[in-house]
Image (cartoon, rainbow, N blue to C red; front, side):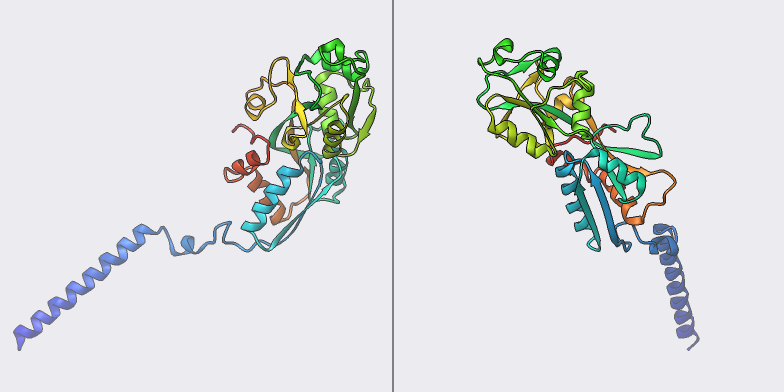
Length: 288
């Protein structure tokens, strides 16, 4: 009987020691029960509406980012109002939008805002498909825009009048083009249109027209010309060899508390997860 009791006690002791070892190993594998219980950003409840307002050139990028973000957070709705960069800056300043969108950098006098670059975009110089001009220097583009060159034959094209089509005042694309080409307040526009898509459609409809548009928006209805021998592509914009380029910015009001959903949307736009989404939309994620 004593022998049986001794064996039983030894077995119980071994089981207790084994349980203690298992408990220690589990503790080593997990820093703390509290830490493991904390939800990740993806798992946490995120809801509400994120309102964005501004640049029409950013439409494809914002649409793609919004779709992916709402798929990740089904209880969040992202809205987009395509009003132009100038209106986007105003919306961010006066708080009528959570996030303003500008396809240009802020000017010195546009204070009280923080700008976050979410992508880089080339401004393509576009001509009608029938136009044989394939390459222009910045100087030639400036003279065409200012009306100093009035016939395409002066730059190797057909014997036809030059028709210059661009964006309305306040457009980030217009500001970027005029600043880079150095034609600020000197352009001779035949038409000033209120969206990137409208400029592309107008150039596609007129054999003598040329204009400018976001690389991310250009389709096969028009031709993009080289500038100084360099094609407008994602690669040449990223390496800086294509000179007519600008930033896509998300704008927020300084001193104003962002909602968790709006803050998460900006963080998502800057994440490695968003990079291929931005590329697919035709823009270039900023270099890290």
